[in-house]
Length: 132
Image: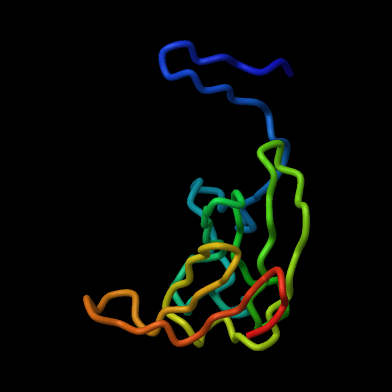
């Protein structure tokens, strides 16, 4: 499929293929079964239906997520063409131990609270040096 050029916003969209799917079966009345109701992986930051968090810094786009069957956070560096440059498994950080994360200068920071106005950074991991 050729890219679609959106002239008024200067954006180019292209077919990314099957990058996600809905794992719920459809009932005969066209409603969905409850997804992952009894057996599911942990949610990122212990928030319902939160599978991935995106962050950007001067190095580019990052994806923060939990791999299926794992408890720790995984970070992937993604290029504009959707190529995954590198992936880090952060075994030191349980995916439910922080309320949110952000990345600045290649350092992953974990926040204690995502709702309090005054919160603290309770985790930091340098992705390039691979040190906490």
